[in-house]
Image (cartoon, rainbow, N blue to C red; front, side, top):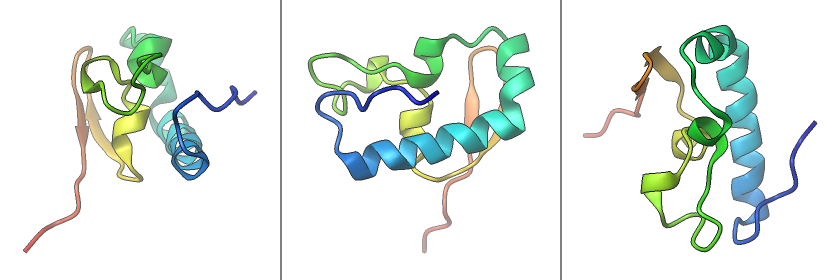
Length: 84
């Protein structure tokens, strides 16, 4: 089941987050659960400034289409595109 788009999040950004969530959970779902990541850790957003408060933003919103390459109880390493 897909949750309703949070207020203050553009539809295109929301659709990207859904794709990122599907990819993350397909690859890391069992580890996410075993490591104790919460729904807020993954999907959380600030209700007043959802796309501005990185301190309460869940992992899914930070992926921007990039894959997680390592995961611990407290850290997710995200592969970022190479820059020149």
